[in-house]
Length: 83
Image 1 (spheres, rainbow, N blue to C red):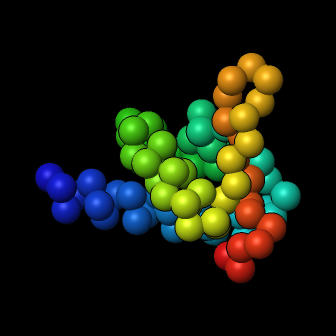
Image 2 (image 1 turned 135 degrees about the vertical axis):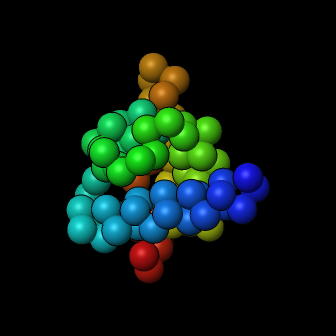
């Protein structure tokens, strides 16, 4: 099961990286990323994986996270990133 989780996180990370390479100005919340960046990709039932992948990508400076006034977090490509 842990191997499947790790493999799914890798696929999610790769899908997000593809999206921000195609749309470098894209920015969205975790829910928006799940609904709009990764629609119908089989990740719909794994929001906890999305959150973990987003945290990892922020730590690696592939994405930046900005807290919005409503408390949600907006994720976007980190300008310092070479992704």
